[in-house]
Image (cartoon, rainbow, N blue to C red):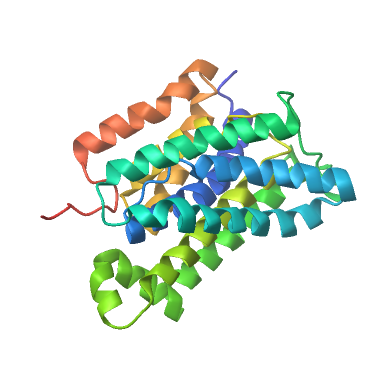
Length: 292
């Protein structure tokens, strides 16, 4: 692909669209880690469930918008059950137990999806009202991608406001610093954990639905996305929401622009970025060094 201005401009727009999905995934993963010190390897499976639930609702009702409204809540319920039944008993134990558990849950979800929907590939149909192109700086660009970009921006602002301008957000931020002190103040920290996990599951499912028209649905689709999400969280700084946003923007643009040179390069460029950045700043862009 030639490195013309038009090609670069289009890839930058593609990168911004992709960044919205990464932000929805990585921000939830980062907030959950910051509060609960849980690196949830099943987070990608929640993204997968969101896509499959959305696909099924669209198949039954013919409405993309109804799927966008209902499916994330269904996945949030799954996330709550997963946190209460499987993860909560492991709080306070060595984090490796939670990592192994969530990896096992990821494989279980993959197999359940395989059983329920089969091994075939599916895709979500673009809503007819958005299935057209518009012109930006003389370039034809899919309206649906613009919708994803604007929706992602709105959801990121909503997340930021929730974390910084609400009482619940204050508790979550305080809990990420010292959960024991928050509990000592009489706050039900277990309830806060569950709400946070539900929110992370909700936004992961949202990402799965809105990216459905771009990407194929198949059992195991959450594996690649969870690896990229973890890379973003590490680059941004473990537990930092703003860091996750910056990391997602960086990785998405690197991945998109490197595609102009080679599709193979776009698959490995993000790991070069992580390697170089962590050499310069081992704790990530906005991460803080862990203290004993």
